[in-house]
Length: 250
Image 1 (cartoon, rainbow, N blue to C red):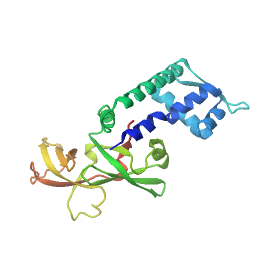
Image 2: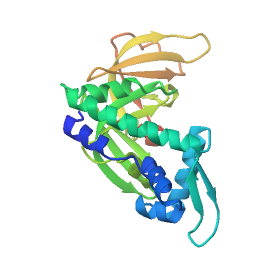
Image 3: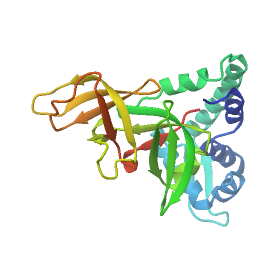
């Protein structure tokens, strides 16, 4: 659970992209703005491209070259967005002052998330281990089971993941495979549950709803017909770490 103190600390910080917008508005230079925001010159350019793409409209206009490494300024849309974030920051601070339960704001933020992934499991980061060009992040789910995801070091830094932080694991229903206790290598991301519902489709995969300990539910699309599947029956499913995306809120 995210404590109120950590939420307050989070709100008091500016996200790196917003900090970059603020520095661009102040400095008028990519090089100086990147340095003030604690970013490399390349990372600043990449962040500007990402922001313009995500916004669907240019937030930053820039000119290449020159002694300062290129000039930059916020567009009218960028100025409006920055002003809106400042106002939102004020409102968030006021809401935090009124919060009575440490977990409610975190729960609310997760309810507002919309994604095409059928499976969205909340867990706490308990370990981060380097693995070649990636990092293996282990989440502990509310029921005690663990889930591992492979992400890049840059993604881990951008999400500010570290042990004790809450994260959301997202993956598609088709990424789950049914396994048995003796399936080779089945220990990796092997989740035990109880079948809550089966929606069988003629000539297609069956949609199986699986209850996990901790009141979380999985949705699996199982191709092969299995006559032994029945409501309240036990089942083991597996998902590859490469199939899992991680997200954070607040």
